[in-house]
Image (cartoon, rainbow, N blue to C red; front, side, top):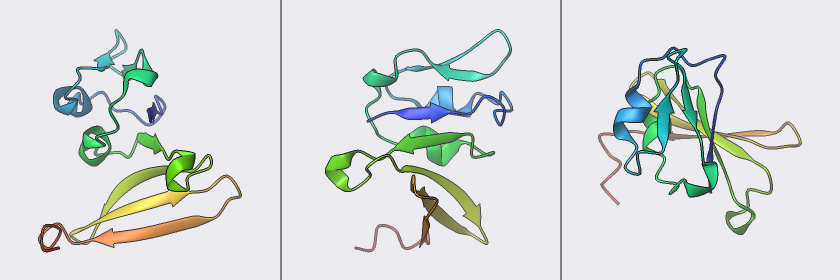
Length: 104
């Protein structure tokens, strides 16, 4: 499992770096985030949820049906929307109310 950081979207806020429990996300001289060793990513998705500009995506492994799909989050009207982009161009959105997420 690993993440991908789109440097063209990154605004250099450093929030992903701060929340990465493995200290794997670094901030370069250009103030943009990067991950030097993606294979070491734990897959916790903390950085994805923290990124305010949706510059980080997570590769969904084949073992969970990903087959090359990537997921990122966006905040919409108080909801956290998990957006899955499939290689065939398809998209699935799952809306989660953070106030209700621990209910189940």
